[in-house]
Each structure stands twice: as structure tokens, then as C-alpha cells.
Length: 186
Ligand code: NI
Image (cartoon, rainbow, N blue to C red; front, side, top):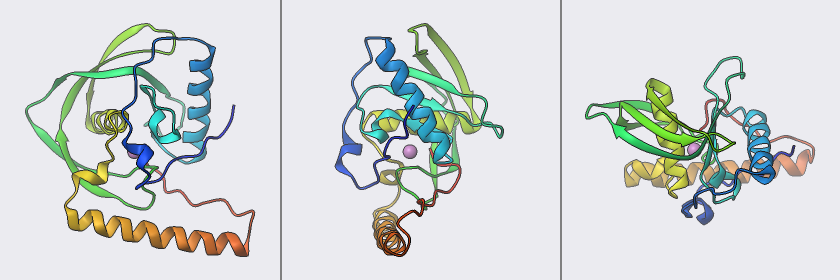
């Protein structure tokens, strides 16, 4: 397994639309294993392949406290969204340090395949509904901050620039330092 580099907003590669997976082979299994290691190392609860610059429709989630409930979604698609919406706070491993409220359908049904190609359908609500919608957005080249007001988007970009400058300075002082990551990123 290997820890992959997570692209950070506003990297243009985050806007690529991922293509469907057609081969459920060793290469896919290695991608899932590497994404899993990357997500856990970054303290994340979800990761889309797009975020590690692989533009294929693969998402992983683990919303558990124990980090022992990994869910793999290959070619996920929403088959139903609830008319009622809910506002939830979101963060993203590709937008470190930025958390904001996003309104989305409160409940969804998702159709997907597992890493071996077996189809399944899952009813999602609460944080799971937020997380799967956030990750499917990544596969479609969308980042959650783009749902915020233009003012908030500009603030987020300024905050990220400042963070990058600070990180560079810290790296110069201590080249072995590991980058900070807040938990609950998707
Ligand atoms: Ni994200």
C-alpha cells in the first residue's frame, strides 16, 4: 500500500469528471487499498479517487469512531433524493481547514458496486447522506466550497494561500514535519 498525494483546492485537476470503472481487477483493488491508507493517514472520513488524481468513479467512506467500518462505492449513482433538505457542516481533505454549512437533500438512495463488481443499493441519511453526496460531487469535478457564496469562496482561497505559506515556512524550519490535517474531512 502507499499513501497518495491529496490534491488541494483550487487545483484544476479537482474539476475533471471521473470515468466509470469497467475492470474489477488487481489494479482497482490496489487503488482502493492505497486510497484507504491515504484517507486514514489524513484523518479523513471519506475520499474520492479524483482527490488523489485518479479520475475513475471510486469512493471510500468510514464514518465510524473506530475507523473499522470501511465502505467502498464503485460507480456510485443516486437513484433517489428526498424532497426535504438538511443543512450540515462539511469539510474536505482537499480544502484543509475550511468548514462550512451546505444544504443538500436530507436522504438519498445510492446504487453502486463493491470492489468485486457486485451491485448493491443503500439508503443513506444524516452524515452518510452528506458524505456520499459530497464524494459523488468530487467524481463530477465539484468541490463543496463552490456551493458557498462568492464571498466565502474568496475567503476560503485566501485562507488556503495563507496556510500554504505557513506550511512552507514550517517545512523550511523542520523538513521532517508532517502536514496538519483536521479530522472529519471528506
Ligand atoms: Ni472532499
